[in-house]
Length: 428
Length: 156
Image (tube, rainbow over all chains, first blue to last red; front, side):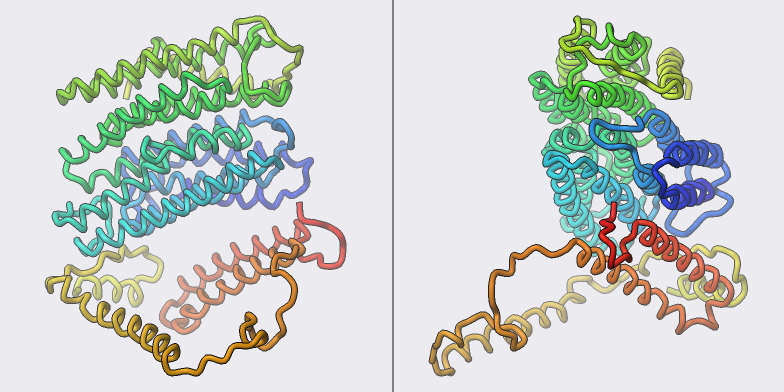
């Protein structure tokens, strides 16, 4: 657990740098610590703890999470629309990431609950960081629904334990009704965390109300970690049951998310609904293997880049649209267009293989109606993603100026480069 | 069960600094689980019937003499006045939260203090790291001037 120790210590150090003028030092401390801990993942098996198992796919998820954290920390602007970035925020992001990495590595329900809470509680705080009713509403909504889902998770664990007498995951498959319903409750709580359709009500409001820098974290790392945990919890069900459940969740998410996203005018709300649709594609992959990590990479990188640009535009114009971005700043405009194209699923970007693999898995198992829903969702996705490209290229409505730090531009260009590289050669 | 005892035993006596993987799962229970829940059900019934019987008995047996004072909400002998919805300073809330935090800390100290000899050096190191975390929290609180009662320094 060397990587987690490094992250936690960095979080504590950043937390104690309380003077506002130390923000850039805090940011670089966090970035360097994240990169060190990214490279120390391979040594994690030397020193391990009970209730934690280190597997190859778990390490892939952890590497993805830490890479995304480094990207977020490099991109996050010094000011959002109303407030400056504080060291406490960076520390909270680091602490939440410790929980996210735990979620990729648990083999016992104690670590699962601990990891979920460690991801969620900093996010409840971060959601309320703007002094606006919207932001407070988002935080309260997220907190109350999150507390409910934790309670449902714990109750599901209790029922499952009653039937099997075991608390380790992966564990034995429960055969009786109570054990099965326990697992279904656990899955329901996890589906809440990732925002799949019957449990998606919080997603648009929370994503819109939260300060955009932190929405990027919510939409990427929190979601990736919750998916890693969801796929692991799903191994408790027999494969056939899980396949039909996943297709139900996935199909409903794709249809409802896409239909709702078409009607949105604010980019943030559009991204929130489209993230529901993307989660639908994600769950069609059925297992937490390499394909899922790849999907996480493709979706999260594009979302982080888009939300970063929305954040920058929002601080200059106070509006949630990207109209006329191309004329104001060509680099940002190009990056936004590439991120949107990747989310649509057009080669050479990594989003293409992500969607391709999820449809391929369904085709391979012979569920053609799921493939049909996926294709329909992709077509609708093309409409609402490409509509935003039209806005970006259109002439600007108001006059505004965007200034971007050089490091952020370099980081985002690098991220786009990696996105194209993995899109051209999905080696792993 | 024997496996569990083994793991626990070797962990504390021989190798103090080696992480021992203690199986946290419960030993497999062969008795039918539903019979084990019977005592809990009985306790539930007893609790429920106690509440119901005492409430109904006092309702039917007791005399009913109402007066204004007697019907007023009552707590701890202090006369109730005004609405409960008044505004408190945020400091009360912060102090209450901090109290909970640093009070719960003792809960972790107690088992360690009882097993001080058995836990040995490893236990000392672990409790020291726990103390370190709490101490960092205290420093953070102090930096944010939460403990500064007199000044008007509202926490950030």
